[in-house]
Image 1 (cartoon, rainbow, N blue to C red):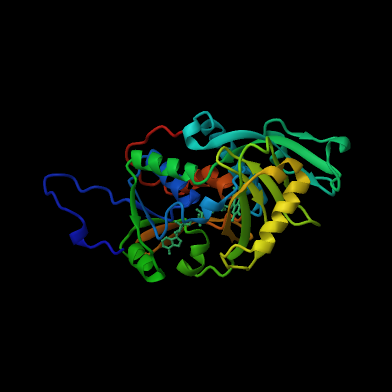
Image 2: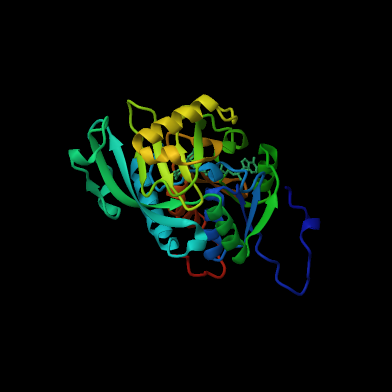
Amino acid sequence: MHHTPADTPSFPSAPSPTPPVIVLGAGVIGLTTAIRLAESGRRVEIVARAFSPHTTSDVAAAVWYPFRAGPAAAVARWALRSYAVLGALAADPATGVAIVEGREYAHDPVPGEPWHDHVNGFRLLPPGDVPPPFRHGIAFRAPVVQMPRYLGWLRERAAALGVAFRMHEVDADALAGLLAAGAAVVNCTGLGARELVGDGTLYAIRGQIVRVAPGHATHFVQATRPPQPVTYVIPRADCTVLGGSTDVGREDLAVDPAEAAAIRARCIALMPALADAAILGHAVGLRPGRDEVRLEREDVGAGVIVHCYGHGGAGVTLSWGCAEDVAALLSGVSNRPRPPIA
Ligand SMILES: Cc1cc2nc3c(=O)[nH]c(=O)nc-3n(C[C@H](O)[C@H](O)[C@H](O)COP(=O)(O)OP(=O)(O)OC[C@H]3O[C@@H](n4cnc5c(N)ncnc54)[C@H](O)[C@@H]3O)c2cc1C
């Protein structure tokens, strides 16, 4: 990872190129951030130890919904910005993003959230429109994202903007060396930031899903509030995702068959037509849990690092808003700006 003079070809007559911003991580946060930085005219290199389909982001359901992430005010702002961008991307089927009608059910009244007034089609459901054992509910339209198709699209978009990619694991010593050499780095390593920057406040929230054949669910449904385990049905073109689980501190990635059966049973109770849907597969991912997303700039020696990790159960939901904040924090140096996607 260290940049040595030998890494950089020298052409005495040409001006030396601006060194790239190094984005660590190629999940939804790293890719989105790289795109926004490249659109603002920065040279960018993504360095990651794993790419799609081997990231947590590939496992995401993925519905736009601010879940298990803080702080509330910033999350609402990041989420609504992403709602707008994902909504625009849904016009192009190649992105894998679609706008889907959905519902949230709860035993108790659904508490008001800052985003409720700003999403399309939001309404409180009348009691007669909520299936037992639930008694309350809301309806709204939201982007649903086919992962990993979307990650592939993001990567292509980044490449078209000139972003370079390198598969490489960066450890704390290598990071210190980069910063000492004056590099600009964005830390989008998700749960990997625990070791990379020694963040003991970051923890895994294990999530398991079942993928079943598409076509049996027409809208998304979720029940994310106690007393029952988190349950959701997310219809996509490639599959319908049944979830879920939120095991804090559990880190095994093996599929738990008993958990899979329980998830499927809860989802069929929510939407009986799912009983006929063939099971396509199972997946487990470790959400990067943190009480608050860490999005801040640190000047370290001659270098600068912007941290952007800890998005919990909402990395897709927060991605575009966070990427714009990262770009703003690094806006001191820029070359040719390009128009953003949306
Ligand atoms: C079952 C499940 C369902 C979910 N559903 C949704 C949903 O519906 N909506 C939603 O918004 N979110 C959802 N999420 C949450 C979402 O998946 C995460 O918030 C998101 O993936 C985090 O993205 P990330 O880019 O930070 O992390 P990751 O996708 O984990 O990417 C981290 C990247 O950093 C790299 N990396 C790590 N350490 C290093 C290192 N030392 N050196 C180099 N590279 C490194 C990794 O290889 C990877 O490329 C769900 C998660 C799970 C598990």
